[in-house]
Amino acid sequence: MKIIALAAGLLIAAIAPAKADWAYTKWGMSLDQVVAASKGAVKILPKRQQGMPLPDTKAYVAAEGGYTDGTTPLEVKFMVDPSGRLTCVFYAPADAKDNSALTALMVKRYGPSQERSGLAWSSPDTISVMELPGGPNVVSHCKKKN
Image 1 (tube, rainbow, N blue to C red):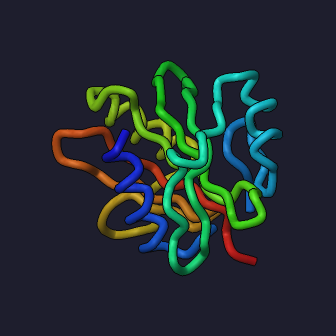
Image 2: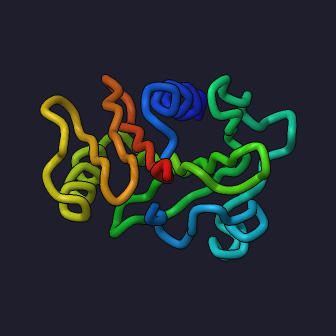
């Protein structure tokens, strides 16, 4: 889980904060709305476990949970802006053996990568995959700036 948090922080710092939506969420939802939409699969983190606000956006990880995309179980983290509104979702396979299944889902859903190196898309949102040697790949899926 610490690797996911670190990778999420690095990814969000490297890309512009991100207009479509992710799974059962809509950009701009409150944390309570995210929890309700997840049917209890997401929990709001206690303040002491929430991520540090990023210097540029002040967004921070405030909730986490699980989700199964197709047959791939994922660990998911939800990042909110200072007003508590959903801006990014970070997810990774629960097991690194599912990295290729997650990559296949991403390409099926969003088409070929829009970047020459690595996996990244700028439509409908800002989405990128960070490949971690020996660990699960981490996807950053953020609301696109207006």
